[in-house]
Length: 321
Image 1 (spheres, rainbow, N blue to C red):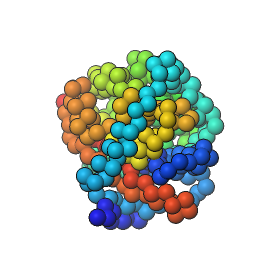
Image 2: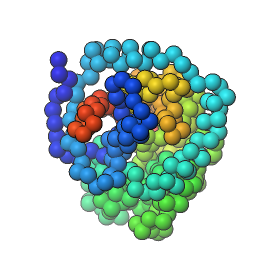
Image 3: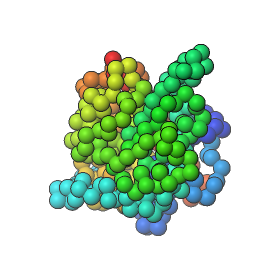
Image 4: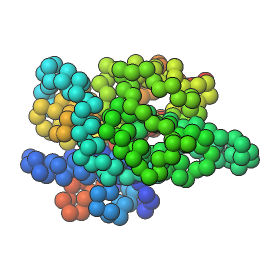
């Protein structure tokens, strides 16, 4: 049965990784990585047209095929290397941003259709122009969410962001759109540091961030965020889902598995793949009330390389009551 359901020609700036059949060389792997970054985060290195959005039906057949590949990967990276990747995580991301600057990820315009709170804020502001809101992007990178949100909406009093990569924050602040009267960004490690002394946000975002953190630290980080946010505020989460093409791709290689559902890519960047149930448990255990959690199943095919990708992303909205 063809799992592909429908196709929509709309901007879809999401994504991050691919899978190929059979053995591949390193050059091909790098091309695959570029494709994954394009589809996860909207890579736009060559100003190519945005690919159409295609959904597919995730069924038992696809799940079984994915599990067969994942279970065959029994190699686990030694503990000393695991700790090395943990200790050097910020350096690895600094290297990434030093190389790509702000040219790698496309602005995340899809947030406008995925976060209903933005429309609620807009309606409230239209009724009373003195009603302004605060947003904070945790793990903001170079501002691919913050800048378009501020550009498209007039109701933000303050736009905050932090990232554990100093290089990313330097690039963000060098952007001509960075206005110190509106924006405030700083270096902060979600695992090691206390969260910044910002005004507590009405809306927080955690987008493709938790997957780069060791799973043993996930609950601690989410609890820290919960304690930091103010009552009534909403946290939007989006990250890689279990059985994603990227996970299958990494499972086919050797010396990439750190733990179950946790891998390291060729550039040293780590990635964890979440199930819906895990996301629900993680955030509710930390104290949040779940508003919704759902998986997005997207089909992407590269016409030139013939690589077919069945992507899985998980997203959710959680409120601190």
